[in-house]
Image (cartoon, rainbow, N blue to C red; front, top):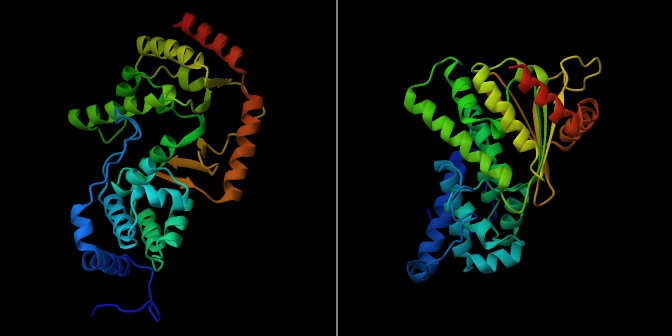
Length: 321
């Protein structure tokens, strides 16, 4: 039956309901603006012409993007017109519509309001998050990194991926069961190294890393791999937008005993955290929880060696190999 009114719609919070409402949105576009849809050609500017800022294609993200596009066309708006209404860039809207970027909460709220979307967009965004299983949660964080203005990382298990050398990454990947196939291992190394473009992306992201001394002294991959890694860490620490601090092995006072975590602030000045364990990980957006992590990170920055002292310790470790 063709829906004729918003009044009395019961919308259960299930993907099935969202899908049917999405069908309604597409039907509305086809019936009310078929010729305009056929004739419209929208040019979407890439965030980075090299493609480094694009995330791996995801069918759920693509479906969500199609939904946004359908409601935008139903409202007879171009991407430029919608950008003005919701105060987001055309590039951002294009990335969401093409399934290359996960939408922020503010974006969802604004398009829901401006496109008069019956609550469908908000429901779809919630389902999108729930359907991205634990194995994909880091992909969500990696997408958030692309729009970050600050990124803080405390790590006590291994060198953060953004600071790893290729040899270190290969050694780490090959030694953790279940052992990957050569093809899978290569793909993981390539993706890990590709993310490191963030360190030199302009405008600069402000990075802070706090790494346990014991992680380096473990000598993952052997002395030669570790020597190359230490040289790389010294080089990364000299970048103008990177603060690299080492937490000494002997640290009687330590605010990071609950484990590693990450923090970021987006271009919209929204803050988020990330925590992970064995085969699990999740993005943290609750303001109180994020605030606690910021308090802990502030303590860690005081307790760790400062960047100059950390560089000196790295050089001593290099000499001892």
